[in-house]
Length: 104
Image 1 (spheres, rainbow, N blue to C red):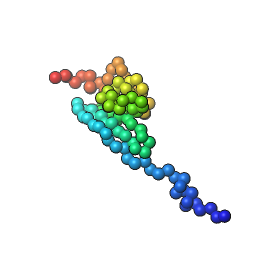
Image 2: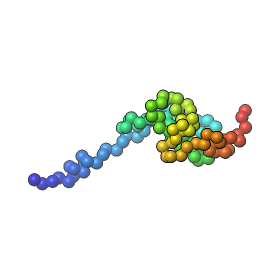
Image 3: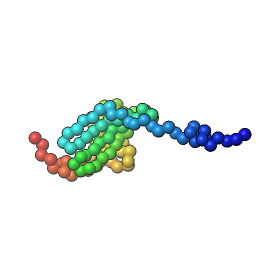
Image 4: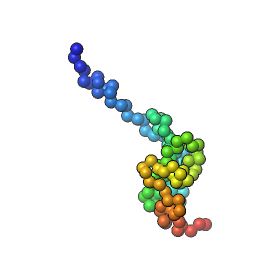
């Protein structure tokens, strides 16, 4: 029996995941917060981008209410950590300039 290598590689290779879908987005004061869903794995996470400092992190939603993680990503990151292993410092801003912005 002859082995068909192309059939093996086509069936053994995982199909690429579809792109993540944006479910919600908000921006203000240099921060962008996005709730994302990966339909291929059904994973939900919140991505946070500080456009002023160029810093970013993502928080997996897990079993929490997705909109709560979207509304309070820094709180959930402090509790759970982030998917890249970084955790925002709960006692001081990770981006010092945010603490020095005058409130109007």
